[in-house]
Image (tube, rainbow, N blue to C red; front, side):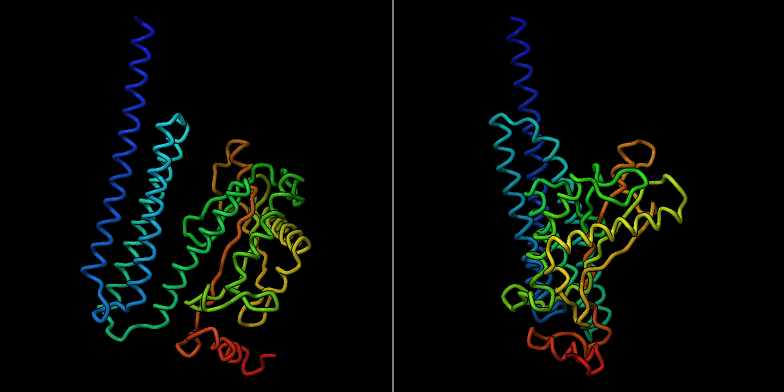
Length: 330
């Protein structure tokens, strides 16, 4: 009898967890529906927001809807006997809700800007579209890296991917461990596939089909970081060496990365070091310090200085390049 009671109690707990997760997912789906309703009733072509911004919003909402459906599928698999999914699902739901809030804030900011300034600021609109596109590029990059078995997370500002240390560098060393180096080298081929349509040069794959916003990567910044051990100046130099080591290793493994160019005919691959100033974990525990000895890859996008340097199409890029190089493009 006691065994039957414990079994019944366990089943009730599992059902309670599933109902809770289902309620959470339905709540998120309700948020998506509200967003869709807002864009359908408030943001219409010909009023205050250009049609391409409506299309952008609808595209993002479609992506979020797809992610909700995926969550529902994972919930179903949980019912089939995978209780370890619960923490992952809770984290993903929280992330998606946070992203919806961020998108709402950006949408509202642009809406207010457009209402205050009937003469639309074309530079701001272009940069906003590119910012949204960069997030989608990084999400694609993140998914491919996770599929390769490498732990990575999108930065808080959604402009970089952060690779937790997890043994990438030993204390006070700029030489990556063998296991850490293997991970970064696997990333080098994925990186080329992802950014080829947003760079120029011999190995560029840019086209209207994959880049209708004409967004260009200005720099792929390989950023080194350090834990808090040692002096600030030492850690700054150490982190820069870490970024350089990884950048050079990736370029050796995939020389095409050095031939991907920005609009100024410069290689997009770049290096930076930030010392201990941008931790992602505490510097008290050894595991926290290990996480902070890491590499980030930041996507810095081209931002026009004036309306004349906003590219209108892929065919317009030669004109922009000549403009940026003072008419001396080769």
